[in-house]
Image 1 (cartoon, rainbow, N blue to C red):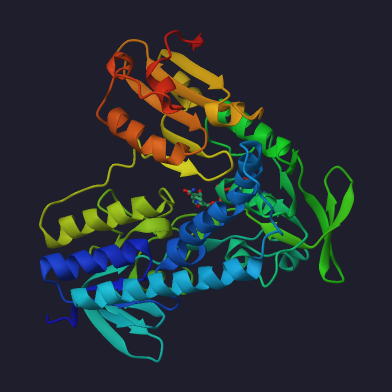
Image 2 (image 1 turned 90 degrees about the vertical axis):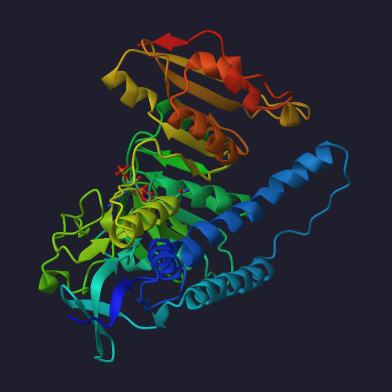
Amino acid sequence: MAFDYDLFVIGGGSGGVRAARLAAAECGAKVGLAEADRMGGTCVIRGCVPKKLMVFASAYREAMREAADYGWKVSSAGFEWQRFRTRLDTELDRLEEAYRTTLARAGVEIHDARAELEDPHTVRLDGGRTVTAKHILVATGGRPEVPERENAGLGITSNEVFRFDDLPASILIVGGGYIASEMACILNGLGVAVTQFYRGAQILRGFDDEARGHIAGIMADDGIELRLGTDILELSDEGGGVRAKASDGSERVYDRLLWATGRRPNTEGLGLDRAGVKTGRRGEVEVDRYSQTSVPSVFAVGDVTNRLQLTPVAIREAAAFVDTVFRGRPTAFDHTIVPGAVFTQPEYGYVGLTEEAAREEEEIEVYCTSFRPMQTAFIGRPERVMMKLIVNRGSRRVLGCHIVAPGAGEMIQLAAIAIRMGATKEQFDETCAVHPTMAEELVTMKTPIRTA
Ligand code: NDP
């Protein structure tokens, strides 16, 4: 049977665009791609990219204070959101255009349309037109999830933060994950009075306990009102603001309420049932290690599969899909030892196991140091950085590395290479230190602080 396309990709985010480009440009496949919104998806349009630019913007407040302590004459009349927003919009337009150009150059046919599956080889575009494809890749990503509760609609999600007309004077952020904690730090840095409610005992559940405590302590010292073991009981409209009654009975009016309570795969109305594609409890597309769904011609990559919701993971899954299907080399992306960074202030870079997870599996030694880094100790700042290595007592392999420090995201990338290669603690220690840096502590920790 002749198909219109060799591959039809639904979704123009990180995963979809990478798969489409590789299949078309490097494997000579005839590829179509449908995107209903802006090209670039969550990462480029309403995630990593605008978030990181906001991290940069917000960090200047602290940088200016530090510059003054170093002897610079600094004066600031404050932060102008509109000026930043205009630049941000221009940059996102530029990136979106770059994605379109790259796809077009690779020969991918772009359909600015919503698409849904009609059957295992047919996609219906809005407007009613159908196209057929030998393979279909679902890469529709995810979207913020808002709790089902009365007046939840008074709140916004991370999507809307990047579209603020003006910065609010105060905000209540609900959640304790990546987005809640990153947004709390960003908005606090930009001068917004931030309150963060987290229902559990400590933010960033699932990450290394010591790192979590370290970050939460500095966030609170920096002025974020972090309320642990706290949830919302009631919400009401208060003339433009939101009145929130907390689970401890206290009440306050905030200019804005931000739900950062997780993300859900975008699978509704995609026709997956019709095509026979199985989905899981949270609506995620179920896939095997080759990203193949229950229907052999349909694959899925990225957040829609709810494996690890990270851009580089979606990109690797997409590349592995292309190797498997178009290069005849079955390739599965290895979801273990994936490094990452949480862009709180201070930043957190991690790779491998947490102390808590490692302790469950094997006998370990824990090396950890916390110190005031040269740059800020010089001006009498109290903030400390933290570096931690988890080591297997028998094999001596470094199982995990956790860094809470300015630039931790950059440092962890390099530690991740060593850890993926199976480096031992002794090989870390044989590596000569780079002096004077913070990262040199990674190769100079001599005595374990704990064994377990
Ligand atoms: P997370 O799953 O990380 O966090 C959700 C938070 O909301 C948790 O603290 C959770 O609490 C809380 N929560 C969930 N439901 C409710 C509720 N009904 N009421 C109150 N609190 C609730 O989701 P995020 O949205 O922060 O991020 C989604 C994903 O996006 C991340 O997992 C990550 O993979 C990715 N991401 C990555 C970034 C990076 O790489 N730097 C940055 C931003 C996002 P509890 O812990 O109790 O379940």
